[in-house]
Amino acid sequence: MTDTTGTTPASSRAFPTSFLWGTATASYQIEGGAHEGGRGRSIWDDFSETPGRVLNGDTGAVACDHYHRWEEDLDLLADLGVGAYRLSIAWPRLFPTADEVLNPQGVAFYREILTGLRCRGIAPVVTLYHWDLPSYLEASGGWAERATALAFSRYARACAEVFGDLVDTWTTLNEPWCSAFLGYASGVHAPGRCEPETALRAAHHLNLAHGLAVRALREALGARATVSVTLNLHVVRPADPADADCVAAADAIDLVGNEIWLGPLLRGEYPAELLRLTRGVTDWGFVQDGDLETAHAGVDVLGVNYYSPNTVRRRQEGAAPGGSGGHGAGSASPWVGCDDVEFLPPPPPLTAMGWGVDPSGLTDLLTSLAQRYPGLPLIVTENGAAYDDVPVAGRVHDAHRVAYLRDHVEAVGRALDAGADVRGYFLWSFLDNFEWAYGYSKRFGIVRVDYDTLTRTPKDSFAWYRQLVRSGSLPPVQAGGAESA
Image (cartoon, rainbow, N blue to C red; front, top):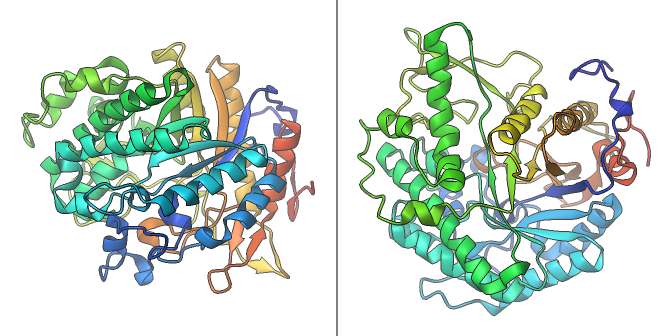
């Protein structure tokens, strides 16, 4: 197969022995056990149980049944050979009610998993918030309210106290852009609100929550606290780099997609251009004295999620305002303040999500971050692809996914060549799972889950990734599937 990332054969790429290979999941997407172990309700329970919100009426009530099958799943991880596993803790499983009394069954569940990972030689990388906000907090306004950020800091401190001896790296938030703008602006994610000003309030309180959580983790754990945040930073390209309107459109998306997080996190400020862009939506009066200093807590390593770049231009006559940028067709745009921006359809090849396949965007993103923030360690915390896998005689020959992974891992290698301090790569995802508003219709996993029997079947991509993890060198893509381990 042709190497789509350049002229260097992928098989020549070798990674440092210290490079961390991992894979990832999220609690609501795999756990199930929604009414067991003292777990409370989350906004995704509420959203998915609302008719018309999720494709086919799917919910995460059972999901992959990881709640009951976690030992089997950890054995698969051990067979895969990864050095780390990125999982998330369900906030409503620990604090199921508004009185914030810690649920001992929830603590015991996660301690078993974290201990099981360590016994198998796998480092736990824990995400505190992967979108399953307790319903009682949304009932009080959710991320639009400062009280939610304060509650998050208490939750983070509790997690440090009960899991601090077992966790290697703490990730405060996963993709806060999605939480704020898909949840509160376009309404395609929980809680399903279409309120542009509320989305900006939510973004600020998520920034504040990160800073407060970092403070709580460091106070509770001291030097043992390695902290991170995972951002789905948008690679935005102007349709015509020589056209000033196209460049301005790309700059606007960069502000609302990227700088709204990077500014507070790494510089302690919101860019003046962002404030000007959104002044028709809000006056940012919800930012209080000291907030940006708190948000400027930094990270020990920055998590980067990447799937596909976007190409934009100034909106043409008849185009939808703001577009979706590949994030689903909601009743409103997630791109607050960007009504004059149009997203262009990606050229083929496309994944089952309709996302373009362009590994160069990952290299560009990592090298750009390295140039802007010298000395900042980076880790790819999500990268992968959904395809319509079809089992044949009990196997899944997912050559498209293998090729996608091969080319994107090579793209990480190119960023290393360019001097980016990339410490590791986490494949998304370990298991097929509940894919948010798409329900169970999209499969990202390297392990197939039969949702009728819950049987796990490692795909060819599992064997390919296992070989990569063991050797540290890119394996070839074989006709008909990955090379056997």
